[in-house]
Length: 345
Image (cartoon, rainbow, N blue to C red):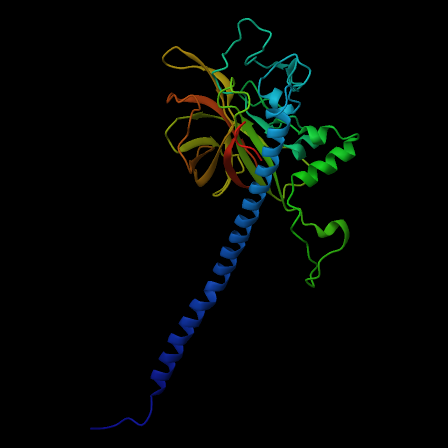
């Protein structure tokens, strides 16, 4: 038997090549790990924001609505549409646009348009957005192709401050995550007010499932990533008209919409429809969907694949024409437990 005393040059080169491929594979995992870690940190921050926001609004609802004979929170009245109690920003015409807001259940009316068994209007409790001078969701206050807007209000604690500057400062503090710190390039934390990163902030979307139950409210927390305080550029809440088909998971909108995989869009339809069964029904939606994919149809439109099937709050399955609101900088949306008289802070 002939014994080999060493390895050939070809064998050495093959070994080095195999080792190099292995090292490249390992190195390729580092950016993937960094991306995964970054997403994990973002998920942790947004979940913390949602828990903080939930605790705060739950306390506000219990103390200022449930325990009060006459509630003073602006969102309590805004859910009822156009009333003459002097409390709601929707009194008279809708948000200064000259478009009348329908009455949901004006207590002084003998024949309200819709009974209290229907859901209330959804309300954006958004102190930071309200501080920009925007009292409606959507760039123009009323939706393109639609009729009515979703009101945006602040909370009584902020509204009671003496000056606008104090209100704006308190809105920033109450609706931002204060734990994050900013660092210089040399990894040293900044000093003074700029040391707070204030990267994440939030708003609440509240709506009574049944308007006759005055103290039970659904609660959705919308968390933003890098939404700039006191700044609302044009197009920041773009609205597009589309047709919603309940139980389906796709919707078609204009290709001018700034959407991509991972974005959030909202069904912000506030209207009244006459369904094929000739029954007139109100639709009052503020329902969020995450975009799973965006397909360019090549005809000036996108088809968005959504994470959950389209839903009508009234349980009907008839298609309806409504409004898609594209809101940038939304990091995540959290559906929280209902606010009620039996669930305290």
